[in-house]
Image 1 (tube, rainbow, N blue to C red):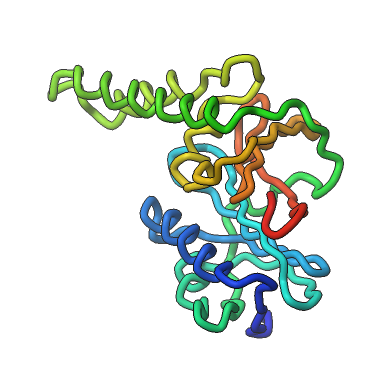
Image 2: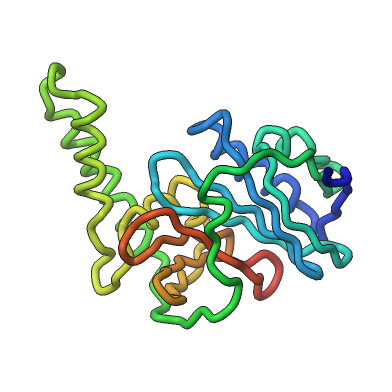
Length: 224
């Protein structure tokens, strides 16, 4: 059983950022899990937001080196955050979902492109608006879960123009608040994986679809 360790963040405000990130996950899935990986002075929190078919990662630097790899309840982790103290206590481990065991290697990522922040945000807004518009046009009797899922798959499986990245990764980054920072967005590749990196977190997908994963080392402060 994993000891209930207390880990402190290197920068103020990171505890609140983690709480906000987990809160968004739990809006979609109250039973969500999170995988925590800490290596030296960096901790990464991985989740799989419901409906998006991507993995999301929230990385941050710690005030002291730590080594950790455990899957926990996202709800329990949220409750274990000490916002004022800038720290969190590692909850007891849980049996993880299949995605938690399918994370690609942490290293070996190669840059494909640096994308203008405005371009990525506009693409996210456009697909969300299209989904809402086409949903509203459906007769109520045809607005079934199967029909909505098919529409979402059609829209979010498209590629971000000029890149191999499925728009589902952009949509997830938007929904998670990763596009709030007005900074260029990096697109990286590692084997079959594609990673959309922002200053606030990252989303990652397989080129051929399927359950994704990611390893992360921040650049400065909290970077994905």
